[in-house]
Length: 342
Ligand code: AHM
Ligand code: MG
Image (cartoon, rainbow, N blue to C red):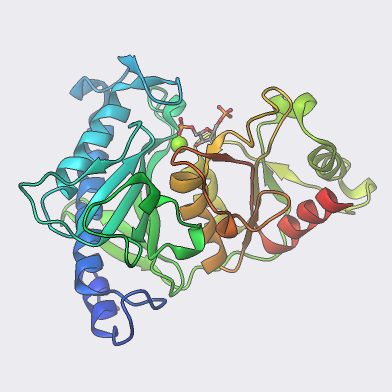
């Protein structure tokens, strides 16, 4: 039987291979390796809290709203605290930003400040927490811009997704799986609960270019723009329609779980702009949902756009910016994007 490779070993080997500049693709400088280890450790703690469910008293809503005006669940807050407490003291980070916090969280003065910036959605798929359906933690790592001075500000975070140095998610489902890219392809690690460590279970993840499976919240159909309506309408016509094949639909309402399925067997995921709030570009957040997922998908050979542009090229103008998302199997994403320009 092949030797099992832990996340720690994988990261150490990546670090040994690092000879180029700190932000060259696939390279893991020591500080980034430490950071990723700590994020993974936090994910283990969150996984434990999620698994306890009602026994741990962690289900249900908290008495608070986040910056986006959404009612927070107890686990949203717990996961956010776990990530902050795990990451603030290690010396590898300058600051953090989260879906659950309005402003950035600067590493307190009592700890050394590092060069990296960490963004996360501590618990994505909040509506699934209480019903025991897969949820997850999404994270994105940026380097503090060169020449940005001693302090750290929100402005330092406003970098396009193409500048990420690491991105990933941990999905808490029947298995707990950590999925990661540092720019050298996509790797998956499964949590071995007896050993308490993440073990490499899939390397070189590749998304098939074609698919017969789409993921979209169909209840919003009447609000969509014409290109998305046209695409889904053609899928629904099946073998008799212009696509000449039958499609299947899946919608988990946890982006992590939907993206995990797409990385595993292909598919297209869409949360497009719609007419309900026309001034909002979309529902999902650019910096800690769309960017990390888009980089993972591209690293696995897929594509990701907002209908017009590659998501990773979008220059963010604010921390909690929203974006329309179309990602997954390359040929399908290119088709929907083409429909937007026709
Ligand atoms: P959240 O970060 O508050 O959980 O919201 C994001 C989630 C995504 O995971 C998922 O794709 C989408 O919202 C589901 O939205 P809807 O309930 O409209 O189907
Ligand atoms: Mg989310």
